[in-house]
Length: 599
Image (cartoon, rainbow, N blue to C red):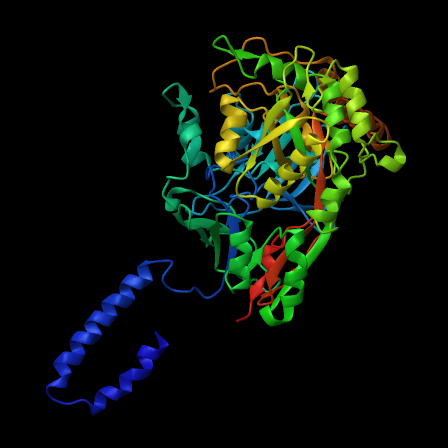
């Protein structure tokens, strides 16, 4: 546009017959500029950051989204947040909070004059609605719901409006994680969504199909730094700055400073890396260990920085489907294989048979380490092997001994058979977008081949795999990963409680899925659930640690998850982005509101 304006003085040199011709050109050019102004992708805004993301989001609904990256991270906020560097809790929509003397009640005070992205006031009514009608609603299966259940009765805390800006959260009994859990639920707009939790369509609440990926972005009302701007499947998802966002800098200026965020969809990590090295996205996270050396050597030329944090605070795992249930008279899992999977000696043998040090060295280029617990190493509740946690060092002979003890036998070809003569073979599924996971399964196939097992790989699109795990539930083994829910072990309750949404190895079907007959919950699963409940009720941190120590020992003895390896969390960020403070646990844009760009 600046080029066009610089040409205007040349008009004084044009005469006669040229004027009409030039006028026509100017009209066409003017119309072109108007059309471009209407297209958010045609003109570069004042400042933007482009991110590479694998695949497409499954939903824009914050209560139903459970995949990483978190699509609502920029668009919706909770009452409180956490500083990724200090790990201290910080105010967000709530400017302050106070505990009652018995610490069972927290009173939150909202910031004054909060507004939704449509300009409507954000008040205590929205907070009460979010918890009571959405996250505590039994007809809405949200992952966050499990983390709010308290005690053996699994009651939810009461949420009471005191006035337009104050809300009381009241726990029915002592509940140590209560405050931190308030940061796991993004507040949602009552004036938009109230009708969707009252009306049903095809037997389900309208809410379950509200704000899906087919929803026009302008119809999604937000409380965070950004609103949804445009979505083109398999291409991009864009966010634009929310004009009603509350945060201001010390001079009273509106934050964030970045006008626009673009998620550029890529098929896999190879494509993501190729595009970044060609000058494409501004941020790629995480980067794979095999890409570290090459990117590090190109930092200066490419004008970017490789950010290195600590060990990824989540866990990659191999798990088997232990569900013994049937659906419409048909077993979810072949009964022959189900017997194998449900033998603890079988799972322990798998753990001993995996050469995870080789995986670290070959696939992770030495930039990683083994994982032994679902509780992250940065948590004060983590039980390390040095402090007594059971581990599984590579020992294929030990694996064979366990299998023979469990009734398996070897034929003259060193093939593993069960007592009935069935060859031991199964399929491991993983998500196709993550090339590294495919390589991990390839090595696992080699390792298990050495103890006589036959393994097949099934790579599926992430959404398809999740639907299989949570819908049809007809999978045998899966290699996947869970992100860290934070330092408090209770954040893992959505994995370990027996009816939890992510209790994948023996999952209870969701309310909208066909139900099962004959699902069996083992005694050790029940024991872990009891420990999680007791741990959440214990206010003494020393005693809580002992409780979670016991849980970790049981999990390692029973190995429902065979923990694998994690890389150090790393990202590559363009130097044009100013203000990056890379935390130990990763997330290059955790302080997005403070970042700026220089071009």
